[in-house]
Image (cartoon, rainbow, N blue to C red):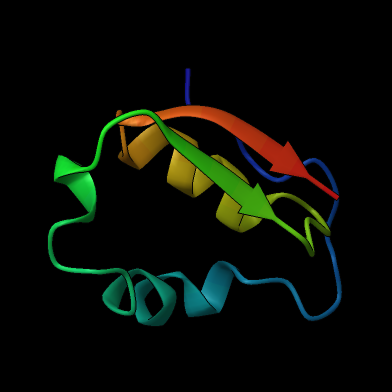
Length: 63
């Protein structure tokens, strides 16, 4: 099941996901044991996207 944002958040990142993804290092998927830190979790758009798209993320911190 695909996780979706848990709340509609004004200023959410849903529309920016493609742009933000493009800013990741080219070899990001080759990194091992990644901890993803989401300082502006809001509705969780980017957090859920990253966790579902990048299997090398082993843990996440959401603030």
